[in-house]
Image (cartoon, rainbow, N blue to C red):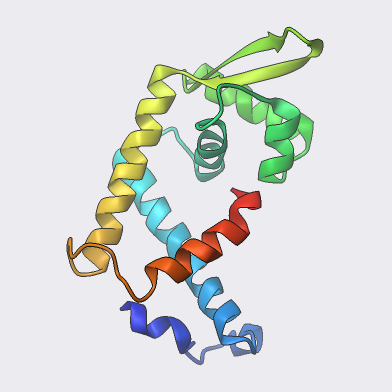
Length: 160
């Protein structure tokens, strides 16, 4: 499916879910496709024990030098107890490490381990390869959509 398809949703059994706004509908389809690409990249580049929600946590934890479990929970849409269990599983597989917050002994700080950072990099590299292949090879940036996609990313950054 090429990029030109994004503005024209296919009619199917879920046609009642198609949004009247073609931009929002295109973004819905793009997000669905991105989840699919990410799932394939995880399957190809990550250890078999890594699940999608765990990957999402690694993505959020990655750019930070440390994030509180409560903040992580809010950013990935989980309760604090669920996020704590998720972090326990990630820590058991050596993807993250935890320490007590020196400013608040009740809070826990989560940081990627070297292993977690390497898995994160490998999945992201695989995903970029899949995207490049899907868009017809390494042709450089797509000038007609690049700036507009950057605006969309900026608007959605609060969820990243």
